[in-house]
Image (cartoon, rainbow, N blue to C red):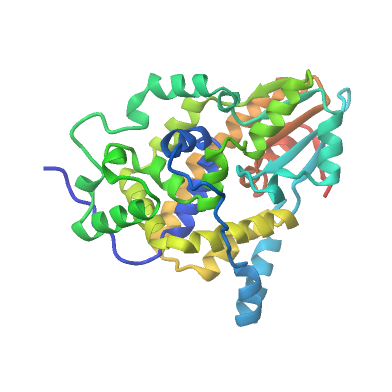
Length: 354
């Protein structure tokens, strides 16, 4: 009999699951459409969320100041658009994205729009996401990355209380539990971390920012390149412990409508270019434990740092041609092992534009 993973009724892993969701939202956009097509409401729901940073500043000024101090200490933590320069090459640009359809995200800042318009080559994380058939073929090539292929089901890995919480959350989204019983937890976590309005827009066919940038570039005759494959991303996510993913799934369900607050806060910070403030803020407003730190470290190494190294290596020959606009998830940019520093180590002068 398979071991049941019991999960305490707390929000201790909210930060972990949200980061996981953030990094896979773009990859899963077509999957979400596939799963929820026909289940979306006739109109786009109004997802009203509260900016947690503003609330923290008002209710706990000392904690707010601590968040600001921690964010300021994150290397390259402020700015979405970065200019990459190297002697003998035309300048290129690195831009941090959010994998969402919200118009506040998909409307590029003026400087980024100018850099995008002038670029000869557009680079995104994976071009597989531009082609639904190719995406589905990639998923089908290794079904074990997406689905349990033995007798395991999601409910068999949960305590009765957590299984009930999961089913309640699915029912609230109009998703029959039986239709996702064999789905791997990271797929469902990413889907449930999306606000209902985001799900509705994606179900209606609206592209997330990265896909829109690539599709528009292709339509205008620009070269479009990818840095990894859909399977690469799935393998990375699947390599993390199953218990980690099951905890994330249940805590995502328990978050309920508060997911709107988290997404609203991320969008507000994103618009301000305050990428380095994401985690200091969420650590301040959501519970944290030693287990969280260990889990986050494993997640960061697998889903961010290791992928950064692959992206930087694959981007090298493309950037050497010059005049490139490279758009990847914003969480890949900051930190001592972020892409900004990786490109500096590769010999580029990297300066923030906005």
